[in-house]
Image (tube, rainbow over all chains, first blue to last red; front, side, top):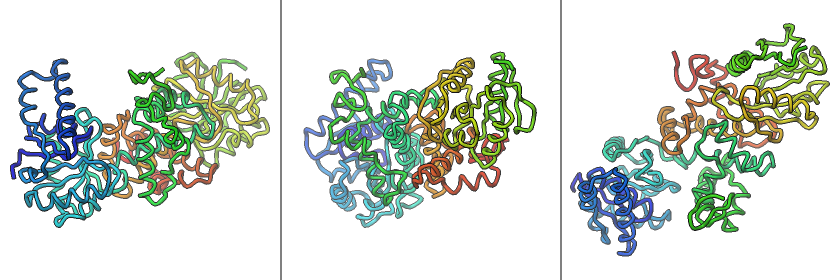
Length: 291
Length: 241
């Protein structure tokens, strides 16, 4: 095991973003996915980001070259044996994560840290499939990882204090702000932010105010950077609804998390927000800007 | 009776701030802790109690003592305006507003009328806030209107998260600022507003709707009982000097 190596599993938006953060912080970074096509797509996403940063004067050509040299694609989980930390960011399917963690458990060094970037599954359940769950934890990055400063460091039921301490140090080396959180549905941010969306939907549903009025009030009385309906359109109503529904189910129907029928109907209609050109508001599909 | 005179009632940060803001705009404004004093000459009375049983008594007294032409602008944080107006014999002159301290930073103030509120009372309320340099937004009647309602629910969830030992107060506030770009962490925000004001909104919504989603976190009620109301009292989720 090499303390300067970080493995990232899954080359989608989150995985590629996390790999970029690791490489920029000086770690030798392995970006794994199941096909060359996915790996290449992730790597080229990172290269585009770095190129734009250089063009904006935020990176020198030399720095860009070094960061790119620290990034390597991988199609073989066995290569994770050299990593001191593996961060899993594959799709949110428990069976898939189970398979990966069981494999990592046999492949990785005994003192390597195994982390999941899950936002909706139980970190305790994922770690529980390994033989040494005390070295498993959650590292919850925010989208897009290169720009968002926060990482929730999730202590599952089995996770040792020593592993949390090590993870906090690594997150700091990644240039991020770690916040240690116990493994509970939604952790801190997704849980506490729920009413921003759900209560706005409730107020709309009760006919108390229009979405434009609610957005205006939340920005100009509340000083929130975006109104709830603008933000749901940006996040995507499918993603936002799925997060709410998952919290509601894992908290055994706590009414504070009850999903909104209005948002459900929008998901069913395909009115997902900016990405489909229509959500609560209408957008120009080619630019994603509002109309 | 002068159009320019107003009485502000309540012993809280919001009342003190409204006094300063209205005096700065040339209003002849005076602050009263209760309805016992003589403020009969004012054309507008702003009543700032968020909740509590004493609000009902206060409204009854105001209604008895004010001339019929005076408008009562009442804080509707903890009760719908229709209910507040029902405590008086003149519900048509009762208009509601809902905002949290500090008002100075707010560009928009939310106003509402109860079912029996007349347009003139709302116009007077709008005129007052416009004179303070604020915009107004009219929404339908309910406890807490929009911003106080949404923020109180965020704070309630933050209080529950803290109480369950998921993370510390500092960590919760850092996470919400960095993870969602909120202007303040919810617990620090609660301390600034006053825990009693937040509790009043939650209790009002719970009472009005009977929906468990508004049930206040036990820690909020205990803090109010202990007098830990936030920054103004020296202690809330944080300790202040």
